[in-house]
Length: 441
Image (cartoon, rainbow, N blue to C red; front, top):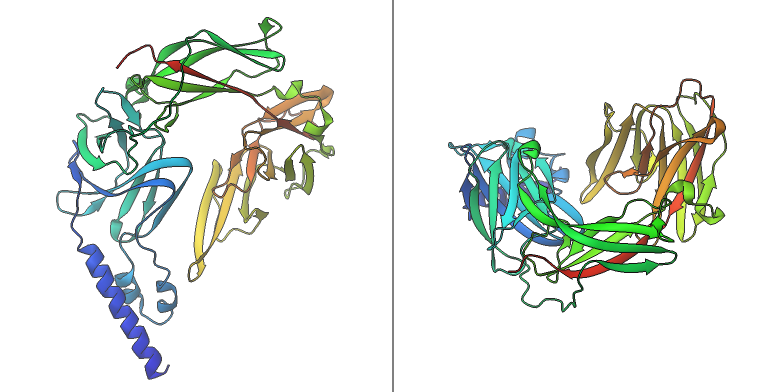
C-alpha cells in the first residue's frame, strides 16, 4: 500500500474518530425518569412519512478492509442509523434509556401517549425497536393521531404494569393554527351507494387499554355505529363496515379523543368473496395435487384484474421461504422463522444495502404480488377442494418491503387430494359523514 493511501486512510480514520467522540459527548436535552428507575432520553422528534435518526456507518465498509477490528469497533457509531417509513404523515418520537450509572439499557416495555388540555389521551399507533453497538438501543413511537394545535406536546411514558407515568414536554413539529372548515350533520344520516344504503346511526364511546390490555394506554374515543342495507334488508353480501376518523387539524385514525368538536367518519365496506361473480375480478388457477413437492408449485403467472396487475408466485407447503427484491432467494444464513415475516439487511457496497425477507408457516401458503391500483382494492385468496368447499384468507401480510404478500390457509382436511387456488379482487364502497361530537368543549 502506498504512503499516500496510508495517509488518506489515517486522516479519514482520525476525522471519523473525532466525529464519534463529539457524538458520544453530546449532552442530553430532554429526559424523564420512569417509575422503574430508567432514565429515558428523547433523542429526536420527526414528522412526515420518511423518518431518519442516528448516524450511518457506510464509510466504515472500505476502512474495515484495512483497519484492525478493534479500530473498526472504536469508529462504529454507538447511535447507529434507524429509519421508519409511515403510510401517512405521522409524528415519531425516538427514545433510548440509561440506568442510574449511565449504562445503556433496554428501552422496551413502555407505554407512550400524548395527553391534551382536555385530558384526552392519544396512544402511540405503532412502534419499532433497533439495537446497535455497545448496548445502545432505541425505540420509535409512531403517532398518526396526536394533539396538533398546541405549541408543546405532553408526552407520557409508563412502564408496563407500573405507575405512575412520567411526563416530558416536547416541541410540536407540525403545529396547526388553521383548520378545515366542515359543515356537520346530525346522526342518524344515510348515504346511498349503488343499490346499498349505509346509515350512521349514532356515536358511542369506545375504551382502549385498561387492566385486560395493560400494554395499551387507557384512552377514550368515539366509535360510529353503522347499518348496511340493500332493498331495506341487511346487506348480507357485504362485510361489516370498517371505519377511520379524521379531524379538521389533519389527524386520521381511530383514537381521536372525545373533545374534538367536528369529526369526519369514513366508512368502507368490501364485498364477500363468494358474492363476486364478474370474470374480471375472479381468477382460478390450475388444480394442484396434494401433497405438493417440497419446493411447492411455482407459477409466477400474471393477470390484469381491472386496473390491478396481479402475479401469483405459487402455492407452497409448510416451511420457510426467503424473498429478495420480490423473488425467491437463498437466505443469507440459517432460517428458523415459522411465525410470519422476518427481515435481514446487509450492506453490500458503500451506501447500498440488500434486504431479505423470510416467511415461515406451518400450513400451506400462497405468495402473491401486485402493483398499486386505486389503493383501496384488496385481494382474497382461497383453496378450493372437494365439492367446491373453500378455505379463504383475505389478509395477506406483506414483507417489510411491501413486495410480496403471504396468504396462509387453515389446515386442509386429511382426505383432500386436489385443490384449486382462487384469487378474487375486492373493490369497496365508501361513504363519509361529518358530525359534531356529543361532548362540547
